[in-house]
Image (cartoon, rainbow, N blue to C red; front, top):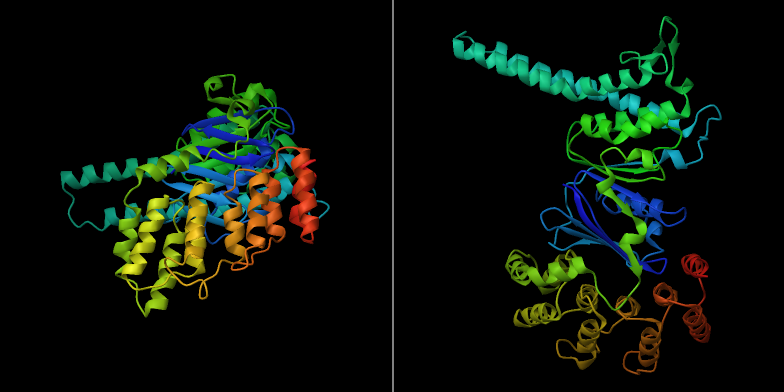
Length: 481
């Protein structure tokens, strides 16, 4: 599974929309334009669900929307610290590698070991396991062959097929070793795969990977990482891989990666034209071409398309409701969990779901309303659902009142700072609701500020309400100035 399109909302005052190729993608741009940050966010957004995600990485943006294959969409919301999918299921099968050791200080806890050495040691262990897996695959093929009692012509043909299978198992490794031999012959070295070191031509003295140059270590990390993908669909993210590489190695880098694993989707940021001039120029995207001034009124194109064309969501939820167990309170809990797995709903879908609960004689709670508000793509629709709480159409306000989470969910939908401040003021004087802003409210609005006048106004309102700034807010404030 590959990435097809990426949208980033409100990153340094710009929106980004990048359509990706399934094979090679090269992002170029000036220093400080955000290329490296985009790569790190892409990798973090699609990590396995059991990984510990670094949501602080997404603080400078409002949302990241990633369209995968099979019409699957992943949305990372920095404010709510959540990842959701448009099909109600984020258990996608996506394998990624991020290589950015070239832009990191190379010192580890051991003063004699660089970060490059640390990664090579890790790859060495993985390479041992990889070779063991190859042997296991070969043994399985041979065992099944010798298990046959008869030796007919059909059996001999079968053995021939199995020999071809064995050759195909070793194909990626053989290609890898051939490429490695061609590269390191230029520096008078030969790779010894059994000892995981190098031999100098004409000498038996081993050269450890730690003794190699930075460029040699870097190419080893890239090629070993690609080999260990085991010729499976992978996404390889690389940040400036050309650093310290000889110009000839830069020129052949993409070709060599694709030779070892043709199923690898490459997404890289670079400052070196040499890496893409020979055959990959049409895969290059300038960062200026995919960015535009942030327009907070316009929703995500990806989400708009998926919301319009996926009409079966409500029906699926209703059908799954039949499998919910327990009393009405337990069923509502399961209902809330289910709707939270979806990326987006239309206003009509939200009302349909509320009517469904009413038909089941189940009163929605504050989590129900807050979750539905979070799934709407514009402020007007979100405010209408919010107002249904005050109107007490589906539940008594004395039982279910909006809370600070509801307010902060709604505040994300406003179209700008002024609209957000108007909302805060109207809710704070509402005697029935009595909702007051907190630092999350102001941090969200700060992300929507487009100029210094709006920042100044927001600071005045924050001080008026006596809300103390935290680290996240101050980081955003500094990045805006």
